[in-house]
Length: 447
Ligand code: BJ8
Image 1 (tube, rainbow, N blue to C red):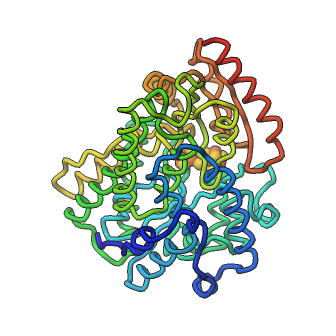
Image 2 (tube, rainbow, N blue to C red):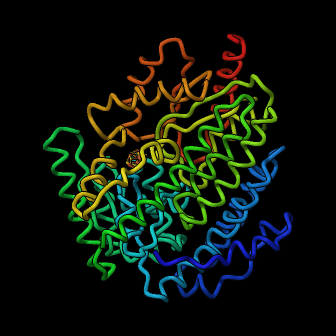
């Protein structure tokens, strides 16, 4: 792995808190990348306001969150500049939309891997020229960001990796490829039979060949070892963060923990791990002293379901504004992304690919049938995090999660459970507020 320059950290060290949302002028770079400058500046100003209102207004935040605030303030700035410079050094950029795509293979040949899912309602009319209105918000958003010229990450990719998970994504990738000409699709099976596992293993091999071709380098055992360790270390840091949230009171808000999980898809993995572990040390100290971000005994909520891509902070901000605290995310932007480590004990490329294939097929996305392990994983998480209630969150039109919610609810027995279907708009805020407040009151009344 070549190392990514650490410019942001150097700059971060000299920033004052009030400067965190200020950015230098990157318009020349954005123009060179091909962004729509006017629309982009509108987007950044909306995001900055939302971030200040939702994040910077929180009380009693750990000091270690300053790094993540800084990353957000520079998410289209310094991070893009880093990737821009990496490309000048002939490194290649691979964009992904799903946690089934094996990142180790990309990193093993010095690729930069970036998650491209979007969590804001942007470019909907443009997206709806290509895909039906009743498509989930996540798909509409990644189409909308591209069609409106607002996503610098998409523009910098050399390859975009799709996957045959849900029908919406699968079909949208065909159109996305017509637009970008750089989509490659991995065939993710929908069952976990022996035949499916064989298919998946051959897909992982095919992916390795594709990456070697696009990145112009042969994968080596040494490269795979190094990449596996980098990705595992990041998973361990996120697992540690998750474990710390089991404390009562939790040392970090759900909003902040969600943000860290979201940033894990964008940031340089080595730097991210270092900064997350520093934060974890601080959180451990808080736990040792019995300090937290809320009062002991506040209703503890586990969110389960569809992923929440950046800047989708809607449900967490309602819960935490209503007196609850989110203690975990059973989601791809959360546990599903870091629950399993890769077995690093391999001594050939073939063996490494087998271990990679088996690690990734163990993921419990609702696109699989049957998907009973997800139910077991949710129950285990409720226990480990001492959750008082579960909110099942589905994006509207996300059929796999909307339907699987029934089984999840049935399995929760006497654990308070609430289902919600929503999107990225603010139209249902009032209704969600009332429902969540009532849910939290109900939990309080049981205590
Ligand atoms: S492993 S959850 S990242 S597919 S929200 S587009 S499922 S209709 S994002 Fe996902 Fe991979 Fe599964 Fe995770 Fe479709 Fe649902 Fe939209 Fe979704």
